[in-house]
Length: 215
Image (cartoon, rainbow, N blue to C red):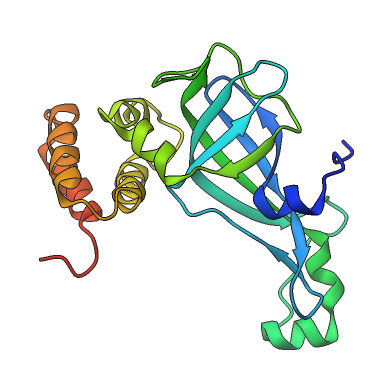
């Protein structure tokens, strides 16, 4: 599919655009821009970070959480192979190989906004292919993570590294709240209810949530 033309301002704000979607999740291709050296540069979202997609067709604002970021060849004809060169030497001697790569973001849907109201469950319709994908703002993350319904959605998914994703998404929400330790306490209580039948799993998730350097 041909990519939708986008202004430089849009490309600066957005991570990329949807290339595949469903009610439960989406795949987006990240846009490539040029760095100071004229080399392709891709802004990749963090594992567990929150994304937004505004769908012009449905009028919905979709919220999703990143569970994988994959970089690979654009097609089967240009598959990369190990060359034994440092990245600096590759840039100097074979800079074209970086333009043959594409980065895809895989995200799971955790809510949507319609008519000014935020709903913390799956949307009635998925985003459209070619809708633009953005990093969610702190205010939106705070609103979406209130009540911890997003954790319940994540625990029901079997096709992703759920425990790692639970911990990473809580850390992202914690940062969006200005490192509010009270939020971590409430998140731990919510996870205790969700994972009460598996104590070892609960402890593992809680250990992963603990911010670095916190006693």
